[in-house]
Length: 270
Image (cartoon, rainbow, N blue to C red; front, side, top):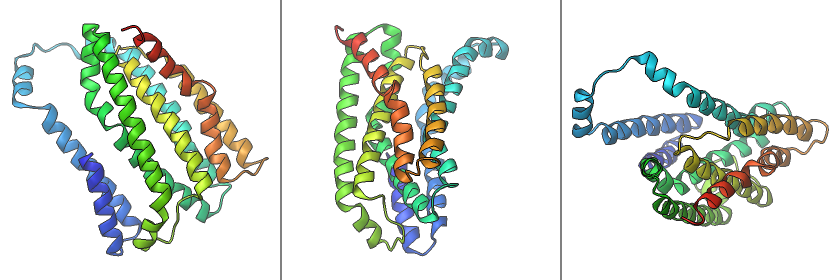
């Protein structure tokens, strides 16, 4: 949360100072470095350093052999996520105007910030989820799932409403020559992003149990998104609407409802 606040505040300040696109890149770099430094300090506490110093070393080959099956699955899942979330810019640049790509790009940047802020409780609880899985404490895991889901939905919906109401006014205030997507398209983008991050959060609750059942669906959704983007932007000429519909429909077909339903079913009677 702190790194995102630094990113937004620094970006606004540098834009006011006339640094243009350099402001966005510099702010993102600064926020990333800050996040890494803070994460290092939180994880490597004096007690953790002492435990690591006392731990018995193991062969790297044995460790890699143990973690490689799920590590490969996670990598393939991220590849599918990249195709779903990033291929729109790559393909869209071949079909859309510079102004349309700029409007879509800045909308997705803010969407990413909103989603990260909405999932802050889930991110904070991630170690606890693994602990509950290890201890088979499904009752506490159910409590965490309810809290994380309610918090995510509340922050996302409230932030989305403020964005629709005041987003373009803020851009005009800082002198931006680019606007967000029109209200109808922005609303659609918010719905698609809400469903995407809601199921991603549910997938995290499954992954805490050292299960990765979603790597094949993720790759399939990525391939479907790529194909739909070509169809919507090429033959059908849907423009930015196609950029939003392609990943939205690909995910709605399976992943948007599958992983939340798996977690809800598992924790229902806990």
